[in-house]
Length: 347
Image 1 (spheres, rainbow, N blue to C red):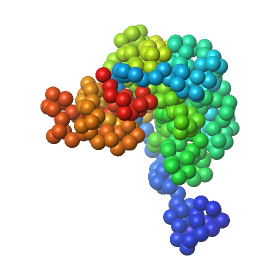
Image 2: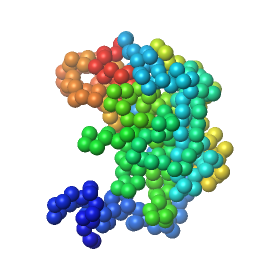
Image 3: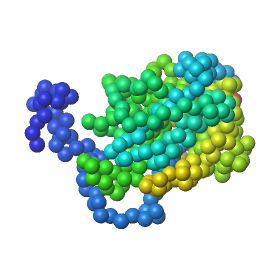
Image 4: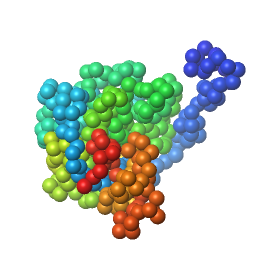
Protein backbone atom coordinates (compact mmCIF):
# COMPACT_ATOMS: atom_id res chain seq x y z
CA UNK A 1 0.00 0.00 0.00
CA UNK A 2 1.19 3.48 -0.80
CA UNK A 3 1.26 6.13 1.86
CA UNK A 4 -1.41 8.75 1.32
CA UNK A 5 0.76 11.75 2.11
CA UNK A 6 -1.72 14.13 0.50
CA UNK A 7 -4.43 13.24 3.02
CA UNK A 8 -4.40 16.04 5.66
CA UNK A 9 -5.85 13.64 8.22
CA UNK A 10 -2.71 11.46 8.01
CA UNK A 11 -0.33 13.89 9.68
CA UNK A 12 3.22 14.62 8.65
CA UNK A 13 5.14 11.88 10.48
CA UNK A 14 6.77 8.84 8.81
CA UNK A 15 4.30 6.51 10.55
CA UNK A 16 0.54 6.96 10.61
CA UNK A 17 -2.22 4.66 11.79
CA UNK A 18 -4.28 5.99 8.90
CA UNK A 19 -2.03 4.22 6.35
CA UNK A 20 -3.31 0.68 7.07
CA UNK A 21 -6.89 1.95 7.17
CA UNK A 22 -6.50 3.50 3.73
CA UNK A 23 -4.93 0.26 2.56
CA UNK A 24 -7.33 -2.41 3.84
CA UNK A 25 -10.25 -0.34 5.14
CA UNK A 26 -11.87 -0.18 8.55
CA UNK A 27 -13.18 -3.26 10.37
CA UNK A 28 -16.61 -3.14 8.73
CA UNK A 29 -15.03 -2.98 5.27
CA UNK A 30 -12.68 -5.88 6.01
CA UNK A 31 -15.60 -7.89 7.34
CA UNK A 32 -17.72 -6.98 4.34
CA UNK A 33 -15.12 -8.19 1.85
CA UNK A 34 -14.96 -11.50 3.72
CA UNK A 35 -18.68 -12.16 3.25
CA UNK A 36 -19.95 -14.15 0.36
CA UNK A 37 -22.60 -12.72 -1.95
CA UNK A 38 -23.85 -16.27 -2.48
CA UNK A 39 -24.94 -17.07 1.07
CA UNK A 40 -28.61 -18.02 1.17
CA UNK A 41 -30.58 -16.67 4.11
CA UNK A 42 -34.02 -17.36 5.53
CA UNK A 43 -36.14 -15.24 7.89
CA UNK A 44 -35.14 -17.61 10.71
CA UNK A 45 -31.51 -16.60 10.19
CA UNK A 46 -32.15 -13.08 11.47
CA UNK A 47 -31.54 -12.37 15.12
CA UNK A 48 -33.32 -9.84 17.28
CA UNK A 49 -31.36 -6.61 17.16
CA UNK A 50 -33.70 -3.78 18.22
CA UNK A 51 -32.98 -2.66 21.75
CA UNK A 52 -33.80 0.18 24.11
CA UNK A 53 -33.19 0.89 27.78
CA UNK A 54 -35.65 -0.53 30.27
CA UNK A 55 -37.66 2.22 31.94
CA UNK A 56 -36.93 3.04 35.53
CA UNK A 57 -38.64 5.75 37.55
CA UNK A 58 -40.47 8.30 35.42
CA UNK A 59 -41.34 10.58 38.31
CA UNK A 60 -39.59 13.83 39.09
CA UNK A 61 -40.20 16.39 41.82
CA UNK A 62 -39.09 19.52 40.03
CA UNK A 63 -38.22 18.78 36.39
CA UNK A 64 -38.77 21.87 34.25
CA UNK A 65 -41.41 22.11 31.55
CA UNK A 66 -39.17 21.23 28.62
CA UNK A 67 -41.43 22.99 26.10
CA UNK A 68 -40.66 26.26 27.88
CA UNK A 69 -37.12 25.69 29.15
CA UNK A 70 -35.69 24.40 25.85
CA UNK A 71 -35.10 27.11 23.20
CA UNK A 72 -35.22 24.43 20.49
CA UNK A 73 -38.56 23.00 21.56
CA UNK A 74 -39.99 26.44 22.28
CA UNK A 75 -39.21 27.45 18.69
CA UNK A 76 -40.94 24.31 17.38
CA UNK A 77 -44.02 24.98 19.51
CA UNK A 78 -44.19 28.63 18.45
CA UNK A 79 -43.91 27.58 14.82
CA UNK A 80 -46.74 25.10 15.28
CA UNK A 81 -45.02 22.19 13.53
CA UNK A 82 -42.09 19.80 13.70
CA UNK A 83 -40.00 19.79 10.52
CA UNK A 84 -38.65 16.31 9.79
CA UNK A 85 -36.46 15.48 6.81
CA UNK A 86 -36.09 11.88 5.62
CA UNK A 87 -32.95 11.11 3.66
CA UNK A 88 -33.48 8.48 0.97
CA UNK A 89 -30.12 6.91 0.16
CA UNK A 90 -29.95 6.48 -3.60
CA UNK A 91 -27.18 3.90 -3.30
CA UNK A 92 -29.87 1.72 -1.73
CA UNK A 93 -32.49 2.88 -4.25
CA UNK A 94 -34.77 4.05 -1.44
CA UNK A 95 -38.09 5.58 -2.42
CA UNK A 96 -41.09 6.89 -0.52
CA UNK A 97 -42.48 3.34 -0.41
CA UNK A 98 -39.31 1.70 0.96
CA UNK A 99 -39.75 0.10 4.37
CA UNK A 100 -37.08 2.18 6.21
CA UNK A 101 -38.59 5.39 4.82
CA UNK A 102 -42.09 4.47 5.98
CA UNK A 103 -40.79 3.56 9.44
CA UNK A 104 -39.04 6.94 9.58
CA UNK A 105 -42.29 8.70 8.67
CA UNK A 106 -44.05 7.02 11.59
CA UNK A 107 -41.36 8.01 14.07
CA UNK A 108 -41.14 11.57 12.77
CA UNK A 109 -44.89 11.93 13.20
CA UNK A 110 -44.74 10.28 16.63
CA UNK A 111 -42.26 12.95 17.78
CA UNK A 112 -44.73 15.65 16.70
CA UNK A 113 -47.49 13.76 18.51
CA UNK A 114 -45.41 13.86 21.69
CA UNK A 115 -44.69 17.59 21.43
CA UNK A 116 -48.17 18.69 20.33
CA UNK A 117 -50.21 16.54 22.72
CA UNK A 118 -51.44 13.90 20.29
CA UNK A 119 -51.67 15.91 17.04
CA UNK A 120 -50.13 13.97 14.11
CA UNK A 121 -50.95 16.87 11.79
CA UNK A 122 -48.20 18.90 13.43
CA UNK A 123 -45.52 16.95 11.54
CA UNK A 124 -44.16 18.40 8.30
CA UNK A 125 -42.23 15.68 6.48
CA UNK A 126 -39.88 16.28 3.54
CA UNK A 127 -38.11 13.56 1.55
CA UNK A 128 -34.74 14.32 -0.03
CA UNK A 129 -31.92 12.45 -1.77
CA UNK A 130 -28.88 14.76 -1.48
CA UNK A 131 -27.20 15.72 1.77
CA UNK A 132 -24.09 17.51 3.02
CA UNK A 133 -22.93 15.72 6.16
CA UNK A 134 -20.58 18.52 7.14
CA UNK A 135 -23.54 20.59 8.35
CA UNK A 136 -26.94 19.88 9.86
CA UNK A 137 -29.61 21.19 7.46
CA UNK A 138 -31.29 24.30 8.88
CA UNK A 139 -34.57 23.41 7.18
CA UNK A 140 -35.21 20.56 9.64
CA UNK A 141 -35.53 19.93 13.36
CA UNK A 142 -35.07 16.17 12.99
CA UNK A 143 -33.44 14.20 10.18
CA UNK A 144 -34.07 10.47 9.65
CA UNK A 145 -32.37 8.00 7.34
CA UNK A 146 -28.77 8.95 8.07
CA UNK A 147 -26.33 6.45 9.52
CA UNK A 148 -24.18 6.66 12.62
CA UNK A 149 -21.63 4.26 11.12
CA UNK A 150 -18.03 5.46 11.14
CA UNK A 151 -16.68 6.03 7.64
CA UNK A 152 -13.64 7.87 6.37
CA UNK A 153 -15.29 9.18 3.25
CA UNK A 154 -19.01 8.91 4.03
CA UNK A 155 -21.23 10.27 6.79
CA UNK A 156 -19.38 11.15 9.99
CA UNK A 157 -19.64 9.23 13.20
CA UNK A 158 -22.65 10.79 14.90
CA UNK A 159 -21.47 10.00 18.43
CA UNK A 160 -19.84 12.68 20.57
CA UNK A 161 -16.22 13.44 19.82
CA UNK A 162 -14.74 16.21 22.02
CA UNK A 163 -11.78 16.65 19.64
CA UNK A 164 -13.91 17.18 16.55
CA UNK A 165 -17.58 17.57 17.52
CA UNK A 166 -20.08 16.69 14.83
CA UNK A 167 -22.91 19.09 13.92
CA UNK A 168 -25.17 16.03 14.15
CA UNK A 169 -26.53 14.48 17.33
CA UNK A 170 -27.55 10.84 17.08
CA UNK A 171 -30.79 10.59 19.07
CA UNK A 172 -31.60 6.92 18.43
CA UNK A 173 -31.32 4.03 15.98
CA UNK A 174 -34.73 2.97 14.65
CA UNK A 175 -33.88 0.56 11.80
CA UNK A 176 -31.05 -1.82 10.82
CA UNK A 177 -30.44 -2.65 7.19
CA UNK A 178 -30.25 -6.39 6.49
CA UNK A 179 -27.66 -6.07 3.72
CA UNK A 180 -24.11 -4.79 3.80
CA UNK A 181 -22.91 -2.77 0.81
CA UNK A 182 -19.30 -2.29 -0.22
CA UNK A 183 -18.21 -0.66 -3.48
CA UNK A 184 -21.66 -1.24 -4.95
CA UNK A 185 -21.70 -4.97 -4.10
CA UNK A 186 -24.44 -6.35 -1.84
CA UNK A 187 -23.47 -8.79 0.90
CA UNK A 188 -25.48 -10.70 3.47
CA UNK A 189 -25.01 -9.26 6.94
CA UNK A 190 -26.04 -6.37 9.16
CA UNK A 191 -25.82 -3.15 7.22
CA UNK A 192 -26.08 0.45 8.30
CA UNK A 193 -27.93 1.61 11.36
CA UNK A 194 -30.47 4.26 10.38
CA UNK A 195 -30.92 6.93 13.00
CA UNK A 196 -33.07 9.87 13.98
CA UNK A 197 -30.69 12.79 14.38
CA UNK A 198 -30.94 16.34 15.64
CA UNK A 199 -28.63 19.31 15.48
CA UNK A 200 -25.81 19.05 17.98
CA UNK A 201 -26.13 21.69 20.69
CA UNK A 202 -24.06 21.58 23.88
CA UNK A 203 -26.51 23.94 25.57
CA UNK A 204 -29.79 22.25 24.62
CA UNK A 205 -30.22 18.53 23.97
CA UNK A 206 -33.91 18.43 24.95
CA UNK A 207 -35.18 17.56 21.49
CA UNK A 208 -32.73 14.65 21.20
CA UNK A 209 -33.82 13.36 24.62
CA UNK A 210 -37.48 13.61 23.66
CA UNK A 211 -36.88 11.82 20.33
CA UNK A 212 -35.11 9.02 22.16
CA UNK A 213 -38.01 8.69 24.61
CA UNK A 214 -40.49 8.39 21.73
CA UNK A 215 -38.53 5.42 20.38
CA UNK A 216 -38.13 3.89 23.85
CA UNK A 217 -41.91 4.13 24.33
CA UNK A 218 -42.59 1.87 21.33
CA UNK A 219 -40.00 -0.73 22.38
CA UNK A 220 -41.08 -0.66 26.03
CA UNK A 221 -44.73 -1.06 25.00
CA UNK A 222 -43.90 -4.20 23.07
CA UNK A 223 -41.85 -5.68 25.89
CA UNK A 224 -44.69 -5.33 28.37
CA UNK A 225 -47.36 -6.46 25.91
CA UNK A 226 -49.04 -3.12 25.19
CA UNK A 227 -50.31 -2.28 21.72
CA UNK A 228 -52.21 0.62 20.25
CA UNK A 229 -55.54 -0.66 21.54
CA UNK A 230 -54.23 -0.64 25.12
CA UNK A 231 -52.29 2.64 24.99
CA UNK A 232 -53.96 3.87 28.19
CA UNK A 233 -51.86 1.34 30.10
CA UNK A 234 -48.67 3.25 29.29
CA UNK A 235 -47.32 5.16 32.30
CA UNK A 236 -47.25 8.90 32.81
CA UNK A 237 -43.88 10.60 32.56
CA UNK A 238 -42.75 13.61 34.60
CA UNK A 239 -39.14 13.79 33.37
CA UNK A 240 -39.94 16.53 30.85
CA UNK A 241 -42.07 18.55 33.24
CA UNK A 242 -45.85 18.78 33.24
CA UNK A 243 -46.37 19.72 29.57
CA UNK A 244 -45.94 16.26 28.03
CA UNK A 245 -46.96 14.03 30.92
CA UNK A 246 -49.13 11.92 28.59
CA UNK A 247 -46.58 11.61 25.80
CA UNK A 248 -46.00 7.86 26.22
CA UNK A 249 -49.73 7.24 25.93
CA UNK A 250 -49.99 9.63 22.96
CA UNK A 251 -47.09 8.00 21.13
CA UNK A 252 -48.41 4.45 21.51
CA UNK A 253 -51.97 5.57 20.70
CA UNK A 254 -50.66 6.89 17.38
CA UNK A 255 -47.82 4.56 16.42
CA UNK A 256 -48.46 1.43 18.47
CA UNK A 257 -45.54 -0.64 19.74
CA UNK A 258 -42.40 -1.29 17.68
CA UNK A 259 -43.79 -4.44 16.09
CA UNK A 260 -46.92 -2.56 15.01
CA UNK A 261 -44.79 0.20 13.49
CA UNK A 262 -42.80 -2.36 11.48
CA UNK A 263 -45.77 -4.52 10.48
CA UNK A 264 -47.90 -1.60 9.26
CA UNK A 265 -44.97 -0.05 7.41
CA UNK A 266 -44.18 -3.40 5.81
CA UNK A 267 -47.74 -3.75 4.53
CA UNK A 268 -47.60 -0.30 2.96
CA UNK A 269 -44.13 -0.78 1.48
CA UNK A 270 -43.08 -1.91 -1.98
CA UNK A 271 -41.96 -5.26 -0.56
CA UNK A 272 -38.34 -4.86 -1.63
CA UNK A 273 -37.03 -4.87 1.95
CA UNK A 274 -38.04 -7.32 4.66
CA UNK A 275 -38.15 -7.07 8.44
CA UNK A 276 -34.64 -8.53 8.77
CA UNK A 277 -32.99 -7.84 12.10
CA UNK A 278 -35.64 -5.36 13.20
CA UNK A 279 -37.13 -7.40 16.02
CA UNK A 280 -37.19 -6.28 19.62
CA UNK A 281 -34.82 -8.01 22.03
CA UNK A 282 -36.55 -9.61 24.97
CA UNK A 283 -36.50 -7.64 28.19
CA UNK A 284 -33.29 -8.14 30.13
CA UNK A 285 -32.31 -7.27 33.66
CA UNK A 286 -28.95 -6.03 32.42
CA UNK A 287 -29.14 -3.18 29.93
CA UNK A 288 -26.13 -1.52 28.36
CA UNK A 289 -25.66 2.05 27.26
CA UNK A 290 -24.94 5.50 28.61
CA UNK A 291 -25.88 7.43 30.52
CA UNK A 292 -26.59 4.65 32.99
CA UNK A 293 -27.49 4.35 36.63
CA UNK A 294 -27.30 1.20 38.74
CA UNK A 295 -30.78 0.74 40.14
CA UNK A 296 -33.22 -1.93 41.25
CA UNK A 297 -35.44 -3.86 38.88
CA UNK A 298 -38.31 -1.56 39.83
CA UNK A 299 -36.27 1.46 38.79
CA UNK A 300 -35.78 2.66 42.37
CA UNK A 301 -32.28 4.06 42.79
CA UNK A 302 -30.31 4.14 46.06
CA UNK A 303 -29.63 7.62 47.50
CA UNK A 304 -27.15 9.48 45.33
CA UNK A 305 -25.04 10.47 48.32
CA UNK A 306 -24.20 6.78 48.84
CA UNK A 307 -22.87 6.41 45.30
CA UNK A 308 -20.08 7.69 43.11
CA UNK A 309 -20.88 10.13 40.32
CA UNK A 310 -18.82 9.49 37.18
CA UNK A 311 -20.43 12.35 35.27
CA UNK A 312 -22.91 12.30 32.36
CA UNK A 313 -25.56 10.96 34.76
CA UNK A 314 -23.56 7.79 35.48
CA UNK A 315 -23.70 6.63 39.10
CA UNK A 316 -22.32 3.47 40.70
CA UNK A 317 -23.00 2.16 44.16
CA UNK A 318 -21.00 -0.27 46.30
CA UNK A 319 -23.58 -2.93 47.16
CA UNK A 320 -21.91 -3.54 50.53
CA UNK A 321 -22.88 -0.01 51.57
CA UNK A 322 -26.51 -0.24 50.45
CA UNK A 323 -29.28 -1.60 52.72
CA UNK A 324 -30.49 -5.04 51.73
CA UNK A 325 -34.05 -3.88 51.12
CA UNK A 326 -32.93 -1.77 48.15
CA UNK A 327 -32.34 -4.96 46.10
CA UNK A 328 -29.64 -3.24 44.06
CA UNK A 329 -29.13 -4.76 40.62
CA UNK A 330 -27.54 -3.42 37.47
CA UNK A 331 -30.29 -1.85 35.39
CA UNK A 332 -30.20 1.21 33.22
CA UNK A 333 -32.41 4.04 34.34
CA UNK A 334 -32.44 7.08 32.08
CA UNK A 335 -34.31 9.19 34.61
CA UNK A 336 -31.63 11.75 35.43
CA UNK A 337 -30.56 12.28 31.83
CA UNK A 338 -34.01 12.28 30.25
CA UNK A 339 -35.15 14.73 32.88
CA UNK A 340 -32.31 17.04 31.92
CA UNK A 341 -31.05 17.01 35.50
CA UNK A 342 -28.87 14.00 36.32
CA UNK A 343 -28.37 15.16 39.92
CA UNK A 344 -32.04 15.45 40.83
CA UNK A 345 -33.20 12.75 43.32
CA UNK A 346 -36.29 10.90 42.17
CA UNK A 347 -39.32 10.24 44.31
